[in-house]
Length: 155
Image (cartoon, rainbow, N blue to C red):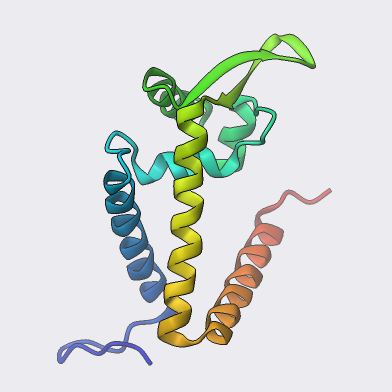
């Protein structure tokens, strides 16, 4: 059921998704601060940590995965590197290139972020029932996959 304001139509699913996203971002930020990571922003968790491989990831790959420009990703990586969350090290496959790896502080912060999302999903399940969360997850997965298929270049 969607929320209805006296002067508005019921909210459409995309509008509710945006509202839910705003709630997630606000709560993630509060969670990071409470865990002692007051210099981290949700964008660092969502656009960098989420896309990093355990053995390191090239900045250009991170940018592509996050659908960001390489310049914007470079700024995020620089911020995280200055604060001891990540390091840039030579790529073991191509010593001319560099990969981004977690520093100890970054590994702990990424774990805090992952735990936040697992806890949030569990809390949503307590509100709606786990089956409904699973249905929402399935539906959103289908929507994202369909959009990815639509926006992928044809071969």
